[in-house]
Length: 151
Length: 151
DNA sequence: TCGTTGTCTTGAATGATTCAGGTTTAGTGC
DNA sequence: GCACTAAACCTGAATCATTCAAGACAACGA
Image (tube, rainbow over all chains, first blue to last red; front, side, top):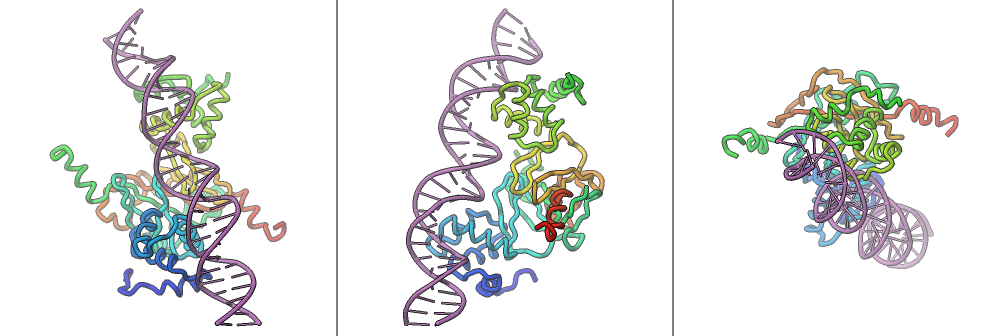
């Protein structure tokens, strides 16, 4: 059950991590949780719909704090602004569409982080394997593959 | 001139891919090949050492063209400007140091591209798996682990 | 040699993100 | 309830990588 019907108690989680509970931060955290790999812009506009006004800086700072606290995870596919998601702690990866940029979670087949061991770690102390699969999502695939017959 | 003995014949490769052979592009290509995951800034300054002057835009355009032609590969670890390398075609990955940002190649343990199949492709047509291992390089490791004696 | 068009130039613009500093406010102790 | 302190928030400006624009130059095939 990845989506409980009732949202997690965001205030308690903020408090637990030593962060202050404010209307802005509650809205930001809930927005990331309700959203699907939203970027800062999307988070900001959704929060503004709810609260009237929140500055970009407040959103940036909050997301930074949440990331540091482990409440959200920040991903940054090449060529894309940073995106945020609520699935943390597990070691899942991402499918990114080259066409529309849509991001989808993929479970990690291997288990816990780092889910992969490099063939040769070159003396590095590796703590994370960041895996991004690039391709075309079902919708964009449809357009591209049927392209020669239907544009 | 040691520069005359190109590891590969860069002019021929440029020509083969339909690109024009200019002093700037030869220098840019050779610089990427001689360098170790250089960013645009580093490529530009090295090329300028050789040719006197080349504009940033020329370097950006050339690297873009080389990437499209498959002569170089562009990587972009989260939070870092784009970097370029000459190893293309194989499906190797990268170790990135969280401390100093140094990038090291790692051979792909799994074999040919895409070296990994996502556990569930969610209907995506996957053509590439971009794997970045994050950790601490030998030098930075030394500093961090021996920290309690030297802080 | 000439013409096409790819390449290079200068200069400005964009977009994501961060910095600076000053003000408000949540949480805590009295 | 009241005051204090640091976190959170605000406005405004700066930074950095990258791209756009438009004109000048030059590689290379005809």
